[in-house]
Image (cartoon, rainbow, N blue to C red; front, side, top):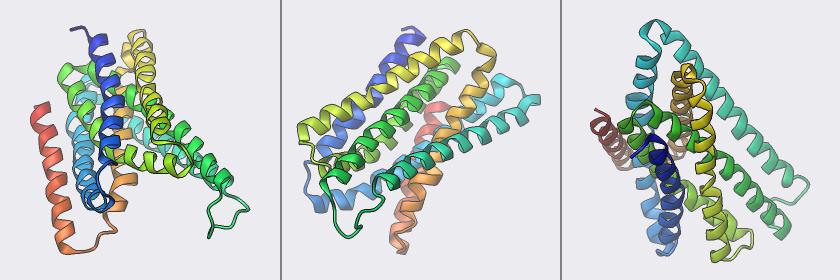
Length: 256
């Protein structure tokens, strides 16, 4: 199968599988969902860290040449700053839409605004996931596969949260599923744009891979780990470490 075919298949699968699994997850009783979600998040964190540091980063360094290690590191710093600014913009828009309201009471218009914002932000996020998948597959099929696994793993708990916001915003389950599916498929658009852009600029591929690594690393460190840190018991911490290690180990053996 060609590289482009792999990219389209993986990007589409990443968008669709995560949405479908999240929708099925919401059918479970709320108590079971609440208990299971931290396990998903812990494992997803490990896969993201593994894909970023054990698969994508070594590939970027190897392609760029050892003497350009500093440039790869600088590209990762730029990537982290870009994702920080993107998240800051989304949070700012969210707070702006709620400005002037009473935080103690929900309002249908504010809930719908939050739902619309989630769809926009999720579409951008999924398109960037597609860029990461395309860059990874262009460096090798194995690297592309492990990156796709990491993307799907972290998208499942992310989509569960998105579904909850969309339903709270007044959408029916069917409409929430349809809109989330469309948002998920923006990953294909991002992947195609990245593929054809990098085809004409192969010298930039190592730095695109470094940016992809930065995106996965940022999601793990800034979005997922802080939530896990709120569980303070020793047992919860031990489960989290073991599941993160399992996720990273899976990626290590797949990428080796």
